Length: 217
Image 1 (cartoon, one colour):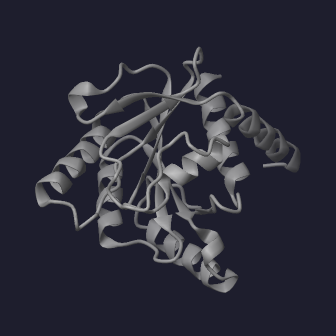
Image 2 (tube, one colour; image 1 turned 90 degrees about the horizontal axis):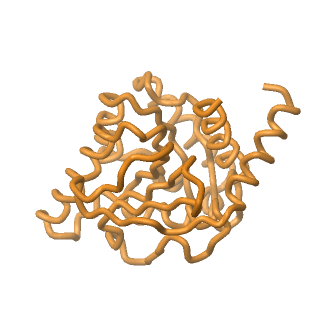
């Protein structure tokens, strides 16, 4: 990809997320999902990995997605879109792997996540968020297996990269990319981001702008 193409995608991504993103829907179950309309991009990850913070940083809206210091607060699929625009929706998924929640509740969230990932025809991509301080865990690999069985493309995004020293971050990226070699449906490259410092946000926006361009052209 040329530098000129990169710059155009960066600008397209900036414009895409400079729009007036709003909350539109919350679904506690598959039966309550909104009608499919346009493309959907979902954000999955362990509880407290920073999904809501990432969505807020992407859209420049500090309170668009509800953030909490208490893992497990997001218990529904939360949908965001721009009023009057039906081209793209963002989906904030319940965090998985939170052991302190009641087992029945964890089972319900897990079933919701896996069923959504396998059966949503409008779902164009899933970004699986991984804490850069800790790397891939067994519970993450279960989600990757579900995505491998689906027809949805997915990519790993490391969060909280600002809290990891550069050599450790480079090692974490390398080990994550090595693990992805076993998952042919996954994007081979890993994005490192920080909601606090905005590291990687322009690249992530550009990736979504490219997807939208490819799917609507």
